[in-house]
Length: 239
Image (cartoon, rainbow, N blue to C red; front, top):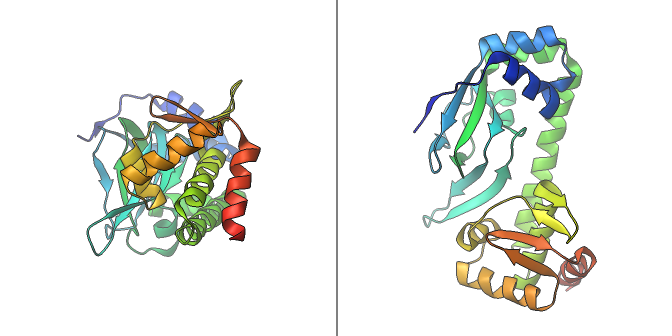
């Protein structure tokens, strides 16, 4: 259920300045955006927006995580990306003015800051560096989507290895044991991202665990041997 957020303007200013691409803007510009924008909270499973909705606003994840997904012609959900606090969504629609290209769904209870394109674009025009950073984020995401498409041609073992490495780059945190994916995903949800059934994901994760390449700690994956996982991915690519 969507509700108004209780976060103060000072708290939001501090977050945007320290955790997002808005950090390079002067305080006056940030305060202008905060006055024009609004914050919302969503419960786990809520639809934040749907594919085809008007692309008239940019969303910044303040807390929680969301997934970006589409439904195929045969009614299967395909997950394109997972977004963490500090990430943005809606940059394509804001820049080209067209409708949303995918669904955004709350993976957990989350809070977002929303700014309309009509209020955002003048600020970006006045501060080209921020505009450049949005374009760089867009390019990174296009590369990631291209990788997902390419990986779909690989055998399951290679597809899982490459997918875990990609998630490690985007959501990993290095610790004593290795790289922990900061995503509490069910195997079904991971399968939607990898294009595999839950059963096949479970089988491949178990094989990687038996090879001492990864460990499972609840719903989180820990990459114990990044070099070994990379070798598996590169072998699959070579094949």
